[in-house]
Image (cartoon, rainbow, N blue to C red; front, side):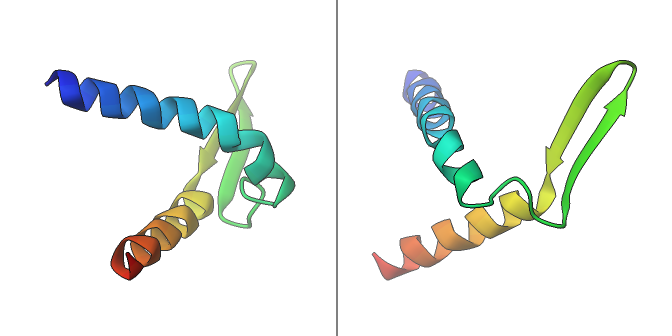
Length: 64
């Protein structure tokens, strides 16, 4: 269980580290990504970006 917590923690660190780079590349602003205001807060649901990044990760995993 500690191993999974460590993997999740490292994944979150890497995601937060690469977020500005991904936003410059346009990930997060794809047509299927939802941004809306509700109850005074801005909500962001990155559906298309998640699918795109999952496909890229799957291709890389099969390639290696």
